[in-house]
Length: 144
Image (cartoon, rainbow, N blue to C red; front, side, top):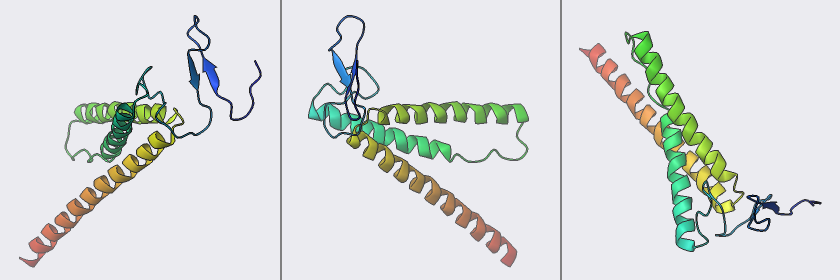
């Protein structure tokens, strides 16, 4: 079978060789396969739901990526287990977002980038607010 740049790659399950086509270049449209076979079912409502799902998945992945540090004095084993748990959760979310983007659908791609951006903004603004609060507390303590 000869493939040319921009052609769709046929996928088969061994029985029907023309059942689905996988896009090999970026495209726009509701006819996407996102994470699960048959989802979003070629309807606009399900496509919007898939976009929102990827958007919130990317936000959660970014927020979890910027988790707070382990406090001093924590048992090393408990601290290591807590960090490993966060790591597994974070990597799982990031791989799901990556697999969704591999649908090559522009709507899904934009949702993933926007979700990562908003999640990064939320996490960093929270960290900055905490740092400012700590700085104010230490400056108030020095005045007394």
